[in-house]
Image (tube, rainbow, N blue to C red; front, top):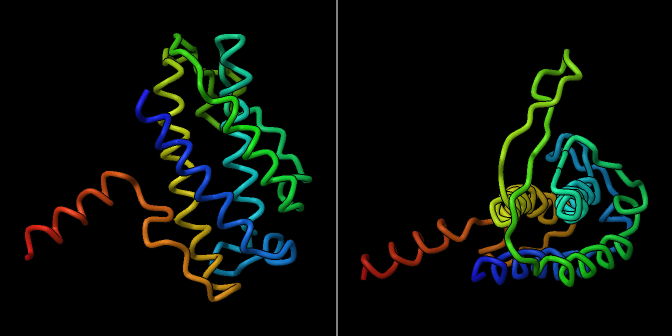
Amino acid sequence: MLFQHSVNKIINQLVDSLQLLSNEQYCRKIPALSHFSIGQHVRHIIEMFVLLQEGYATGKVNYDNRKRDPDIESSRKVAITSLQQLLSSLQKENKDLVIEMRFDINSNQANSIPSNYYRELMYNMEHAIHHMALIKIGIREISGMLPDSDYGVAPSTIRYREEKIKTNR
């Protein structure tokens, strides 16, 4: 699938940005991110992808069941290794999945929603891009570095910007 190339690109962008940070910067609580760290956002991205990979085997994915692994959010190297491992596990054939989620915080009853692997992989890519937009803010605040202008931007927005540039000439 062509979009799997896009997923790989997004994960590689994230890896590249983490390699520019120190571990202290990666773990630092950032006021502009509601006092969350870049590491916490990265952990969240990784755990969503991991749950999808684990759910592929069983046919059921429950994004509520994140482990919230403190090693991923406190070690830039662990996060990079986890992301690189994800890259090698994403190439799978499409198949039907059931997504189980609790939407009501006052209830333990899970809702089951039919989906498929490619749909959930796309969801995880868009979810990662959303968090990378926040990570970009954090990187700017703690390091002054400016990630690539396409970092944390959806492919449709990038295409829109490119078309605007072409039509304004």
